[in-house]
Image (cartoon, rainbow, N blue to C red; front, side, top):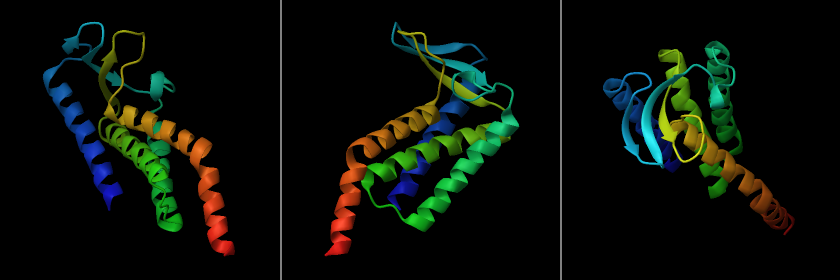
Length: 158
């Protein structure tokens, strides 16, 4: 249940931010800036991360929905219980879900967070959740997966 709450919070925060940006800024307009750190700048992205596959919204929508469906089926079948693994799946799911909402209902993804101290593409809360979730997943598999499998095998053999 906590994972559903986290999903709803991430999705709601991202969709609310997208709504506020779209309602208060023209495309390309910056409505807030913290000098040399970041700004809130309204951008439409018709691609994936870094505008990869720009203009391929149908394909990207299908990929987003397929990923979300896959995570739900995995969650139902495997019933994962390791907190770090569950957090990573939840964050990636929520980000993909929120961006899928944009792709399906808007035809583009609303991006608004611009990091100004480096040259980096504009992104949104959903993108940050996907990235953080993927990083946590890598950390889980590198540092914890073997320990978890060993603990499960020891429990089963006792």
